[in-house]
Image (cartoon, rainbow, N blue to C red; front, side, top):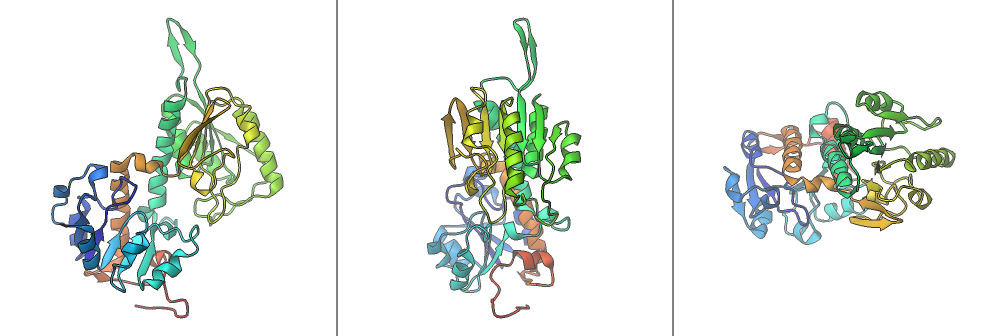
Length: 364
């Protein structure tokens, strides 16, 4: 089986790193890499020892399986042979037409963001891997934009109090943001609708903000659960009270398949201290802050608001390494003796497979 690794369009990451080539060879997979695919993550073509380096057209035409981070554009999908396996983050909850487009090209597609977020599949969870990097990078971006120290500083010229960081959403990204902000010396408080997050937040040395009456769903896979308007009103009031004292707000709350919940309205931003910073990791789904603009940094009433749901791409080398590790673990169950193992009895494969024939229960 020939596995093709194309170069990502506007993302410096690469879906497979050189060290993964030998691991896939043991599965009977021959790796082919597009010229320059790893360049943005600081991997040269020569680093891919054991892989074949090809131009894009030759790569796609010879592929039995294509692995990428972002879905290939339609013009590239058209170059693939029918029954080619494509693996990427297709995000079918956000793109209702993607499954039909892939079926139209007669492709077998596996969406990495649809892998069940269970203990069994933890080693394949690209969402968690990238969220952890995003949470870390969010704090570094906040420290870059904030015109004040994060830690307490005691100097001959006087003492500086530590920054106060408010984290909204204590999933993987939020917890990493808490840990990173604490390492930098900030005072941190966090909020999450899931009561189970309380102990995790406190274990990292942060204060947990409790608001009674939240809906919970243990099967939400790390995403926020849509809340009642009454609860959201109380939540916004509490956030506003905390935001007025915060130097930094980091928001991470997303509801799968829906617009991100509004946690920081314009009125709250306008009551924050001059120079304060908001980092909105839910920017791609509408943002948790009313003023967020995706992939932009704006300043409103002397408050900087950075909207970026792809902060992992700012650390392309480590992000690529973790992504590749996740993918290799997934391929270990998807490929047997160099051939596709479409075992729909396996919940991980079944969850990720987004193009089964709608009228049939396929078994291969």
